[in-house]
Image 1 (cartoon, one colour):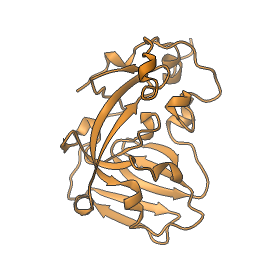
Image 2 (cartoon, helix red, strand yellow; image 1 turned 135 degrees about the vertical axis):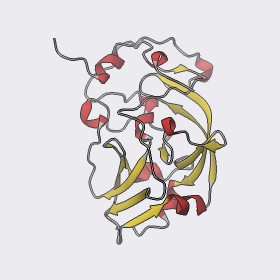
Image 3 (cartoon, rainbow, N blue to C red; image 1 turned 90 degrees about the horizontal axis):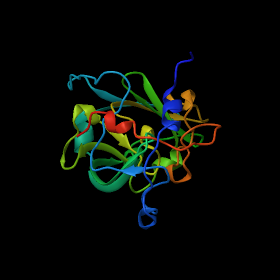
Image 4 (cartoon, one colour; image 1 turned 30 degrees about the vertical axis):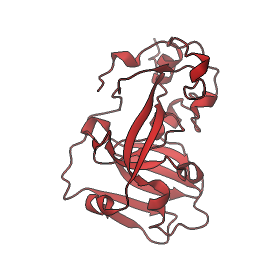
Length: 223
């Protein structure tokens, strides 16, 4: 029997519908939760922060390597946003603190042809986002959640928050920002998930209609 993929399992899920009064905040096919489910591929990394760096490379005039201390010294912004996971849960009013991605880009000299970004993270994870999508008011290189430093299971020391896209586009444990001239699919995008990932358009999967869903995420660890 052919092994079921993560995309196949999500297609088969079933969730209760959210009332019309919340339709401007909760995308179709999602269920609200007060929990913060913990989902990722592979083990939670461990770090020696004296050695940890964030590398920026690709279509920039000069590659840069940024330390954790340098990130902490940058202007910090607090963001309150709703987040939506492709596994069907949504969590409202999540509070993050860190560096707006557009502020971070001011430190770089991006070449005019740099239009796309690949976010590289530990456990050999990567996901692709157009540069334009990262310039919004709520897109954050997050260092804190709910007033406290990120926990390792939620991406410490650094994760990206892109709240207007499904949450796999908000990678934990970021180690590299690659500026690209052309789009290139990341890990989940190569494994049946949509390249754009707009939750309000229900862009979960590539190339197929989405059947009625069911709650797999409730079986996961959560905070």
